[in-house]
Length: 444
Image (tube, rainbow, N blue to C red; front, side):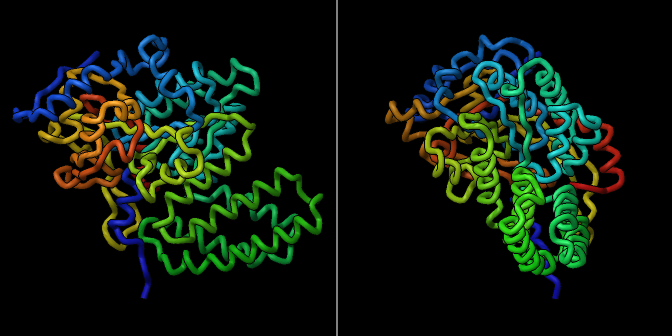
């Protein structure tokens, strides 16, 4: 019997001018609630605009907060909120220009995000094509494209050492990886060409069928991938000059990503964190990284990618979650069982945050958008206790789901180091390429 990826597991994977402030129904505040609201209002750092190119006067306090960070995780409670992508773009601009960050890592394919790096560094290809090739329609938006354009323009103005590098850290969409590994096998291990081609054809077909791929076939590819990796490593030791050191490193890493992708989905966060650690180890010493993901991945909660980063880098990893009060966001219709083709875009509407939820408290600050550092709360025991009390939060996924069923209780200080809050969410704007992709029911 064929085994397919359970829908629940996939949904966990993909969970992925100032407006007026709307008020939720009144709720009596306890003494602790009142203290929490007062603390939020006192410590909120107003973000005056989400527009890039607006200077950094309002963001200047973040320098002291992030001065010891080497990796900043930029989360989001939904992947389809325009304000989140714009806010994260502005934060990235600040981190690059004011704090020396040069590496951008995305919840996107390790392999198939590489053309985007070539584009922002060298102008290779067209922005529309390389953005679509990442294979995640969630990022194929006008907002994200504007940031890619900004990266490309910035890189034209700075010396090599200050140029931004773009990396994916996810496991899936390995078309370019298979192509590069296949080319290397033909050069250095011709006896393995036939078995490699057969193995890669099977993986390509299953990748095309995501999310309803046959996990038995995918897992069954792992031994063949392991054997190929061992053969290439032996060949490297016997004839290292057949490829440059950089070529050997790249081919073996691309194969490693495929091997991880053939493993259980429950390890996805750990594998993404390990891919980032690999990049940290292979970029110049002192390189600072942005880790652009869903809130669930940047979190330091046990099992999340951020958890493994915290274990490795300690407080040099700063986990920043993004939340909103109310509004609408972009999502996409999940394919029905047995149909691997994703559906149309779907606007999801969310009412004002429920009384007592984390977002409801944040909305009491009565600011359209602001930054809140949570590490400082440890100096205030009553507030620290409030932050370690469970509160509902809204957790949207890229795959459309009933918004009334997306509330989950968390202890926010145990998951994040900081918050960025926006009152109003509006949907992201898919690019023309993304709309054509969706019309063909391709990608996800």
